[in-house]
Length: 277
Length: 320
Ligand SMILES: Nc1ncnc2c1ncn2[C@@H]1O[C@H](COP(=O)(O)OP(=O)(O)OP(=O)(O)O)[C@@H](O)[C@H]1O
Ligand SMILES: [Mg+2]
Image 1 (cartoon, each protein chain N blue to C red):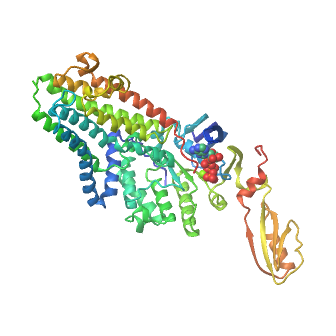
Image 2 (image 1 turned 135 degrees about the vertical axis):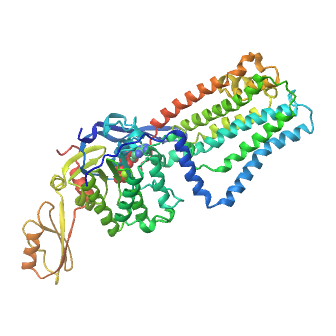
Image 3 (image 1 turned 135 degrees about the horizontal axis):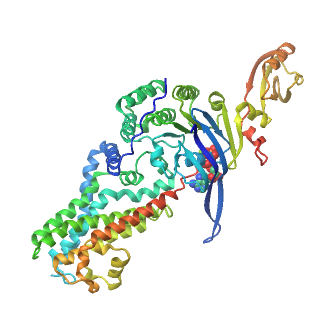
């Protein structure tokens, strides 16, 4: 039989790859459907516990750092929704360390598809939606009970904030994953920034020390996830006497973060060393 | 461009840190691949052998783009593996004997279905290739079985099929017959031979089983300590290593050591005697002579152990 030179087609894109791999993982766990529901509910309840703590606090006090319950709920909702989206898409990227350590990343690298998308979809599970669901519910509740003078600008700023916030969290996830190529146990550090950052942003900046606020504004720009735009929506004064136009910069900050994280990822993957067997 | 694989002075150095004290760590360099150059033309089937830790797997990982070389130049199908890894993936197939690419919890067929979509294989081509693999590798009864339930040999056959559905130009096999029984080995070898003959697929194969090489590869490369020690025909390798085969004869009774030209007795145990003779020589005249001069009951020929051949060969400098 003569050799047929089949036309080589371009590699599937990031999104197509993600869907394929996530689909395989969903099917892998489909056998345990009961456990899926349990995990979804469990995920929802565990993350909802954070909000219960805040609600309990407000049964004792009327304001927290000068913010009302509805306002804190708005911060909580925006932070949790942005993080929940990023976590749903990239949440298992911190398992990359294990794949690097045992060398099973090899098998992903020989496929004709973007590795980052494969790693992001690795061990995908629908229970990751639990946290997102919870964030959206709290956000919806806060929007209904807030006393804000809504302008067009403010209304537009809410979805922009959520998307940029998601992108910033995604960048932190990817940068953390890239770091695991050098330190495979860096997952802990990464979750301090992702999970820890999310919790931090659920509270108003006025409850934290100034240095802390400076850190998350200028060093790791988590303040752009929700604080800066949200304070504009709420009509609250800025921490550190920052200018008000910063409320509209999150998309730029997000783009910069994603670019840096992408670079870190490329450097990381080139220094991957596999294992000896 | 008829050379599908090209290596020029390729090196891979691993930096390993070792704990030497409570807090002190020592950095050490391991030169896993230490300046290798070779070329493989389209359609050739090459054996890549050498003792444990020689650098075989490391070479293959560089050829697939998994590892970035520390120095030197690599090209596979005209592409730079580590820089154009995803593009190259369309043109190569890889089987790691030690590691599966199949989906553990899903039926075997699902892994193939994913390859169909991920490599964007035309439907007709996919069916044709799959049917062929299923038939020749005996996979029909395994397609619905979750991969975790397959035996090692079954899984390996499944992995080989998975690496070939997209018609790769080059196939790398890193110990594809490890742990297989005789029948499975024969099946895999026949399959590879057909593949090479019919589709001109270029195959680079590492193994510790010399029979694989003998039955499949005209050309063999020996690597040790990251250096290419030999590149040529298998027969020449035996000469280069001055290797010997062993003739084991069972006589009717205990006798003094057998006298035969071109062979020497290396061991006697009761009526059984071991004779060493050059691997490049034919066993037939020797057997004929012994059968005529001694009361022969049974005999067998043992092939030289590849590791022994290489060990004997290795004295620090290339042999060609
Ligand atoms: N990821 C790694 N980190 C550090 N050293 C490594 C790594 N991978 C391989 N090595 C070292 O490089 C050398 C070559 O290893 P390699 O796996 O290529 O050998 P091999 O020829 O495939 O051996 P085997 O026959 O045992 O499979 C060994 O000394 C090994 O310890
Ligand atoms: Mg090896």
